[in-house]
Length: 196
Image 1: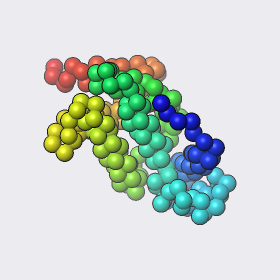
Image 2: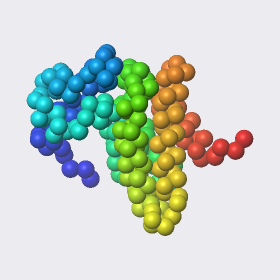
Image 3: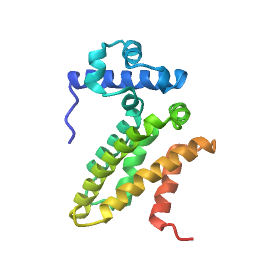
Image 4: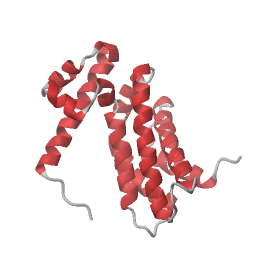
């Protein structure tokens, strides 16, 4: 059972979210190179020192929403009952966390920034860390050692890459179906494999 989040943790989360939102908004408006960390801190109503308590750079702040979504997915997956098959647990965790955190407006903003080279290392590093975390949870669920079994790593990398592909398709193709429907299709395809 998850313990309740205290007031201090809620305030810290609110500050982190405000900084991430400010960084994303400003970088969409002005381009990443046209924004300073001082401007991000000012927009979020905090000091420069507070900014650096949460993020090491404006690029890290811009991708923080994606990182938070991936972290929430890994946590939700870890909390699923051990009796559920891996793909069923994944499906339920995805539907529980992703649709409420990804909307067309936010993904559209990130699409504007997608071509910014300075963001790529931050996205890659963030998703690599979450792939590792998911692989460890998968290994626990199936009772294997992630240092000796390739399955958890392949599963985690496939899930994260496929989720990015689904979100990109949802936006780029102008697909207005609920994201939860596309997640269902994603799980079916993962279950069936890619042979055609």
